[in-house]
Image (cartoon, rainbow, N blue to C red; front, side, top):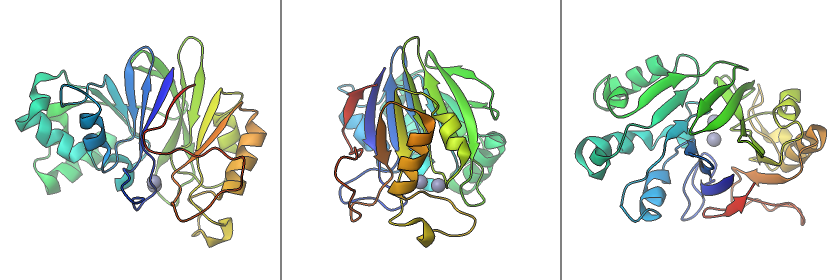
Length: 242
Ligand SMILES: [Zn+2]
Ligand SMILES: [Zn+2]
C-alpha cells in the first residue's frame, strides 16, 4: 500500500500548502479527506488533468477535511471530470443529510449526489472502499462527530487519526499497525479548548507508544511549530510505502 500525502495543513493552510488529503493506492485508489487545495494538487499530479479515485472517505465535516468536494462537483458537472465514473463518497452517519444542507447553500441540495456515490459508514463496522478494508472509530473532536480510519489491504495496515483530542481509542485504532498517521496540531495540550479536540506532539507520541504501531507519521501541524528531532512529519508531496 502506498501513501501519498496530497495535503497535510491544519485548519489554516501552511504557506503554499493544501489541507487534509491522503491518497492510498493498493489495490484501488482511496482519498482520505479532501480539504481545500487537494483537488488542484491531484489535478496537477495526473496527466489527464482530472483525478481518478475509486473512493473518497471523509472523517468529519470541518471544512479543512472536505471543502474541495465543492469544486469537485463543479469540475465534474462542467469540466474534465465529466468523463470519469462517480467515486464512492463515504461519509459519517447522517452525512447525506449534512451534504444536502450544504448543497442548499452552495448550489442545489442534490449537487453532491449527482457526482458522487454517497454512502454512510457506521462506528466500528468494517466497510470496503477502493479494494481496501476500513474500520471507522469515533474519536473526540470538540463537539463534532469525527472518526479515525483503520485501513488494510491483504498485507499492510495504516491508521489515520483524522482530528482527535487525547483518547484511549487512538491506541485501539492504531493497535499494531504498520503506520500511524496521527495529527499533532498543538504546541501544548493545555492550549486546547474544552472539550479537547486536538493533540500536542507529546500526546500523539503517547498514543503511538500505547498502540504498539510500528511507525509514526505526524501531520496536521502548523509550520510555525517545531518538532523534537527524531519525529517524522508529513509534508505535502511525501510518498511512502506503508
Ligand atoms: Zn482538521
Ligand atoms: Zn476538525
